[in-house]
Image (cartoon, rainbow, N blue to C red; front, side, top):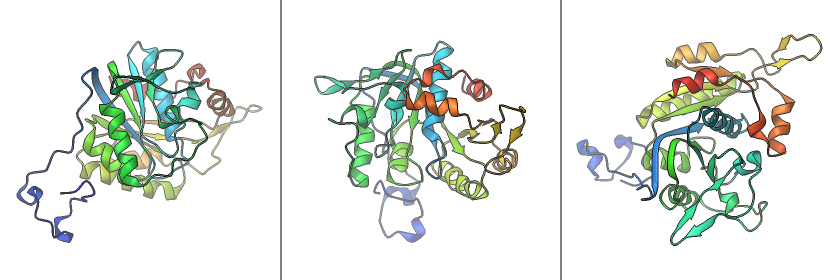
Length: 274
């Protein structure tokens, strides 16, 4: 069976072990110098909903609790994690392996932007090459002792998402969405893919859920009323969180100060990961 298998044997003529109930093992070996306890994927059905922001804030939240935290930036064609943390420069190599970059508070990270000569260089790669790079981030990086690793995955359900689901030892995923009805439909695709791959959905985050007026203090639903409660109930997802539209968060990301953001929006979700 190829890595592009959709697990629907009725539409496939390949004679592979999965027809006999024996799923092949696509798992990538961890580096000998890596000891990662929990791996949490952060996914979204579409782009532009704040998946990288949630990845960063969850990492910051767990780091403040005293845990060793890492981020594997699997969004290879849109890597934004280093910028949010103010991390620049190229990764260092040790023999055939690499060392992750480290933020000001001690969060380890690997991103393709930390391998490019210029951060603005485009990544014009086909899917299999990108997927291979993600596997190398897991196998060729000496992560050391990590309590929680967050994997910032690309939007959608394509090659890289499938590679992460099959190759990394995910303990579960967090799904990021926004209030629009269309996104509710797209969330279902992400949930269905996770269930197809037997990956638990640990929580749901609705980003850009509301805006708090600085004059009257009232919440305004800029992108429509929240559907978080009904979506969570529909899919049986226990943990959920809502994030506001807050210009100070955007400013912190743009200036590399995401670790200075001190909101409590994700605390309950973080508790579910303990």
